[in-house]
Each structure stands twice: as C-alpha cells, then as structure tokens.
Image (cartoon, rainbow, N blue to C red; front, top):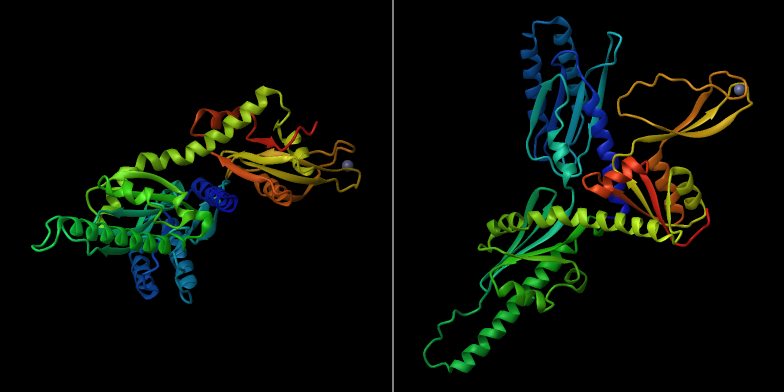
Length: 414
Ligand SMILES: [Zn+2]
C-alpha cells in the first residue's frame, strides 16, 4: 500500500474510533447513510416521517433530542447534493459526563460507495458499514476467461464492479467438411491468439484507469490451460503483467465468474497485505539482531534519525495513539515539546506543571504524532508503512517498541 492511502486509512480509522466512544443517554443518536443514487427529496420526506413518529417517544428528554437531531439533519440536507460515494451523517445529543449532553454532528464522505440507505436511531452510532470499508479498501483487477468468453471487472473493497464481457469467434473443435485438419487447426490457433489479444487490451484499459496508489494487482480466473496460456503469453500491459497475483480455477466466465473468482482468491487476498507487513517487520528484526546499526527504535532515537534523513522506512503501528504537545509556561520561563499517549474519547484531566516555577503550563499546540512524523518523513523521502497488530511481530511493535521503529539507510551512530 502506498503512503498516501495508508495515511488516509489511518485517519479514517481514527475518526471511526472516536465515533465509537460516543454514547447517548437514551436511544437518541441518529446515523444516516445516503447512497449516491438516492434522491435527497426522498430522504427528507422519510426524515419528516421519523420526526412525526418520534412524537410518540415517552421520555421527554429523548423525544426532544431525537427530534432535535432530525431537525438539524433536515436543515443540513436542504441544499445539498449527494457526493460520488454517498454521504453519512452522525448526529445526536452525546453524553459528555456530569449529567450533560452536547448536540454533535459528524459528516463522512466514505472511501467507497454506500450501497444501502439506512436510518438508524440508537444509544450509540451505527458504524458497521464504514468499518466494513475500512477492513478492505483496496482495488484488484479481475479477469475471467476461457476460449469463448471473457469478463473484466474490479474488486473495490468488498464491492465487485463488472466492466466488460467479450465473446470470441474461435471455431469449435469440430471442423466443417472440406477443410484440411491442419488448416483448421491453424485458423483456430490464430483466432484464439486474437481473442487473447482483445482480452488483454480490454483488461489493460480498465485496470490502468485505477489510481496507481489504490491498485493492488490482478487476479485471473478460468479453466486450465486457458488462463495459464493467457498469463504466459504477455497479453496484458507490461506494468500489469508484473502485478499478476495469482491464477484461480473458476467455472464461469460471464459476470458471475467475477464473484466466483473473488471467492476463490479470498484467502490469498487476506494474506497479501499481511505478508508485506510481516516482511517489513522481519527486516527490522534482522537489522536489529545483526548489529548493523541500521535499526532504530524508541521515539527519541527514531525522531533524531528522521531529522537527519537517515530513515529509509518508518514503521508505525496502526494501534499507536499519541499526540505531540507544545508546552509553554505563562511566566515565560519554560517551553518544551512532549509526547503523550491517549485513548480515543478519554477525558483529559491531568495538568502539567512548569518544572521551573510550578505554575500550570499551557498547551500551545497539539498534533497527532502520526501526522507529525509522516510530515517529517515526507521531507526526507522516507517511506512510511503502517503495521497492523494482527500478527506476532506487529503486536510486538506496539507493545514492546512503543509503536514506532525505523529501518535506516546507513548506520547513523545516533
Ligand atoms: Zn514557569
């Protein structure tokens, strides 16, 4: 995965985590999923209907809060156009402790199209459809073929898009009377070759339109030996030919063959991501034990190496939640930057005292440490990779190394 998409995935994940911590005091938090195909006028009439029904809610507080959330949504919707992937609203009176609530709204443009319209009212926000997108937001090229028919599509997250189905003019195995067997065989091979070429061109056209940073590779399905012949014949664009992820036995070559292909490849898809992360962590551990001086860990050491441009790859745990605070004493005798771990939604209680005069210091700047380190990395052409905690080395990265390590370009002596 590229840096940019990895970073936006991290942002998206963080937003969902924050939403997950929010609770209503009754069933009064509204989640509204609007697919791109939905007419806003339909949505508003449904919401007006919900508003009327909410009048039957027994608790006055809950009733007022639900109706308030609906009114806020209706006013936001009145002049809006639905974006390309649809839009999601989370609105409601969120419990902020001390017997108080606060009317909050979050609006999310999802990374993939919303499929189903949903209106959901509960004591927490309904996040499953977005969490589903987070699990797998990558794009794969799909191609199924035999000698008669081929279909081309894309797998975007969990969503299959069918683009084209081609049919061949390859003659059957039975030759017509009067043709020599040799001549017939020759014509047949030429027709097959031409069909493979057409498939390759159609597939390349579709796959090359995908933004490079989102494209993971190509999956090919079909009977044997057709798919093997196609793969070894270099019919795809040379950039795509290098990115074939695997060949899978699939019986159908029409649109339904595309979902058959995704099912056949599902184990492989889960592995690919994890393999990449695993290899990176293994490289880090190899450098670490070899005493090459090309492994750095601990925030301070990694930061120093980043600053001098010594980091080749910065490895950040997906589980890392920390922020960088700039502190300043109002008496003007102290200024510093510190890193503090946090849990999403956690109340900030502890204040920090000036080490010189003992006054409570002010936080003058607050940035997410991942944003801050990514920016540093960017300036030094350092690659950033996010590592999940779903495997041993990834778990160690978060729990034994504080979530941040680096593979260095050279032994920096830092
Ligand atoms: Zn002070």
